[in-house]
Length: 331
Image (cartoon, rainbow, N blue to C red):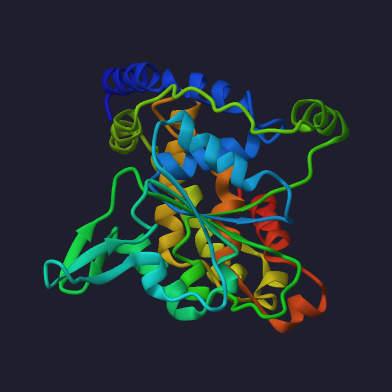
């Protein structure tokens, strides 16, 4: 790519991404200390992907997502998944209108811009499948009619790592449909002091003003396609993904006994998209290896299946991906 066009892309991205700083500032007025989580949720939103959140209750997952939807002036729905839930509770159904003598469509809570699917592993597999199909197809069929879902459309599903009794774990093929898997950590002591002073009050928290219009997000989603990816960065991405499939080819013989199945081509696609969204957040028109390192674990960890040997050694997919990033040469 000629130099002049790269500088032109850089300038355009830098101009178009100005709203990001205002958006982050607006969210941080309510959410304290979860800056990395906010950045990674924005990466998922800009890259038009969906996110799986994992963390113990009470870490402001719902508040973060609700605040984001207020800041970008979109509709927000929190759906609590339960064992007795049916697909119709999520998607909608046909209701018979006695006055008119005909069936009418009643849309479900999936018809919103930002969805928080709370405790997705508590719902039966047919409800999980209905949600994941809607995420993939971005449309829902009720009766004989098909309805397109609104744009932007982002699903954040939470899984509670504790209390696993009575849950239906997501199958690996369905977990693969999530672009990112984010772990929500506890705040540090200074952040928690600010949270205590800010939130230990009765009554509702003040709503925040919308700083971004939804069409700005939609525009940004199409602009990130123009972000430049150098061939050396492409090689770095391919090496990382292929090292999960054939570790011995990359002199990682110790990992070949630990990985049952490596990452799919969907990981490669999502790694590029997420890195482009990170470059957009940084007001850059090109990807650097640092973008890959920043978001790579969240893209790859839930796509690698470990062997019994790895589980016996109490290793997690996070440990394996960390080893990959330490071993694969950075361009």
